[in-house]
Figure 1 (cartoon, rainbow, N blue to C red):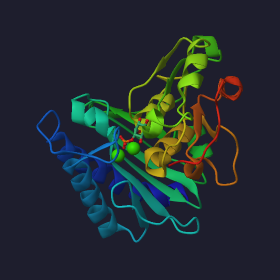
Figure 2 (cartoon, helix red, strand yellow):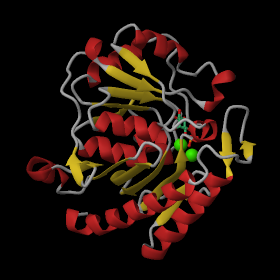
Figure 3 (cartoon, rainbow, N blue to C red):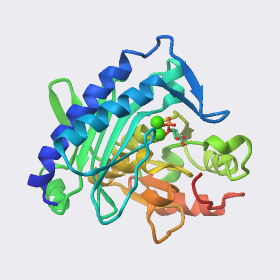
Length: 285
Ligand code: IPD
Ligand code: CA
Ligand code: CA
């Protein structure tokens, strides 16, 4: 799709993310009823209410499929679909840590085309489009932005080319207590090779911080499409590179094993991860 077709969709997505973000912010640092999906994975009524709002607002404007963390949904590569994470970073939200967001991605032909990530407790938003003419738009006027006060600043990935000078981010899967495929060994190996590694608890925000040049790179395994659809669009539109840890026919959205960087450190990070002990590529779940 061309930018002219994507822009009005992006505008609605941004409005929806802001509305859902305001709803969730109303429950931040308040008493919630918490449920456990598993020993490590939490959910609250704000996850459900935020997703219900997103589904209602998006379906009122578009006929696209909607796939969300709490309500599910089927993804067909031949049909455009919104991927919504009503709160990415629920553990943070529950504990009063401000690093959480609402994430909405539009995937067309299996590739992220639009992304909006709104983090109300941080007062930050990132958005981007990756349309057919995005490369040209980036050359002329950028394709990814982060509002700062009254203006929307174009964002771009960092220009650091050495892994040893890189600030990286990662995360660990919810089954980490039981599964040996938990990223612990890779984390230790990479931590010895770079400036530092952060683990802040929201995959969508980690990707945005690669896009705006805060982090040089990010990797994580066993992610789900709603964690990453928006963030992948934002990284790519800001000039970054997103691939799988090891290529599969389905690509990163479906496999959930992701490496996102400024492009300059991509091969070096992939190399270190491939040689880290105990790195095995297992399906998400
Ligand atoms: C989680 C966050 C976290 C990542 C997990 C995700 P949720 O999403 O993105 O950073 O490590 O794999 O599931 O559960 O807070 O929506
Ligand atoms: Ca998530
Ligand atoms: Ca979530």
